Amino acid sequence: MKKIAPLALVAALCGCLFDKDFKHDGPTTPEQLGDGWEIATPQSVGLNPQSLAAIHKVLLDPERFVGALAFLVAKDGRLVFETYLEKLADRDHVHHLQSTTKSFTSLVLGIARDQGWFPGLDTPVCNIVPEHCQGLDPRKLSITIDDLLTMRSGLDIENDSFSVEMWIDNPSDPIRYLLDKPLYADPGAEFRYRDADPQLVSYALQQLSGRTEESLAAEYLFAPLGIVDWYWDNGGHGETMGAHGLHLRPRDLAKMGQMMADGGTWNGTQVISADWHDLSTTWKVDPAGHPRLGYGYYWWTVPEANGYSTWGHGGQYAFVVPAQRLVMVLVSMPDTNDDSLHGGVLEEFVDLTRPLWEAGTP
Image (cartoon, rainbow, N blue to C red; front, side, top):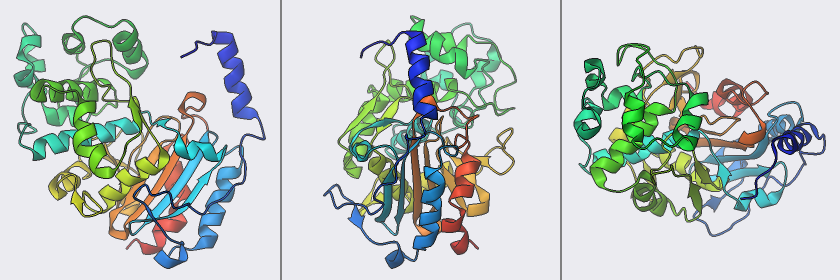
């Protein structure tokens, strides 16, 4: 990949963000592409076309959902609305999903658990990687898989430094490097959103299976969903980046959402168990700073909609309302949008899509 000088990069990003011609009004009717999606009209599945048109108008506003590239809606297993705000070619390109990757890590762990490869969720991670735990603070020996899945490891490493330390500094023993971090709280005591915890889950998956998380996903998740085009960033030791780094096409992210809306099945194939679907998307902890949301196993729960969602930096969402078999997907430009710009916070997407899900929510 060609490297861009820092000043040129800043100029390029500013130009993309504030160019009033960035967003374009294009088609909203999905095409039949033979990719596993059945196409239908919004009316045929009980969705109001005027509500969808109003949402589309908001997305076209250059000051709202600033980095938005693609918006898709699926209902009852059929794709009914699809629009690309910059160029139609984005339909066929993979896009960086940022922390939506974490929800895929949850799915892969659930598959490993369903296959009997993974011990109980109350298993300490040091029981899985004991060779990396000699001489640790004894409190760290109690960090469980459940603690990692709910962002309660207590390990003190913030995301800004995590990516630099792990993927640029590239420590020789990355598992030990993370476990050596000081504790900000006792394990299991306090939620703090971070990339370190899902990365330890990815290491645990690799230790138990002898395969990278990406390899497991390719066979047991992507293949059943008919996902053939993806890219997943790896670390310096060949490990899968379990917190971020997955790149998918928007329609394939929507497939994952539809699979979840149908309790873990896609086109009649059980991809994850209904048990893991229910367990991973149930509110486990209160996420600080987001009183309207809950947090499960790398899924954000949305109680007001009886649903749950992924959340990737810059506006990457697969918002699912399972009782309605409703899936709403937004893919954005994560490299040019941060959460301080409109559209980068999940609650904003929940509010945008309210006309679609509220009518059918008890």
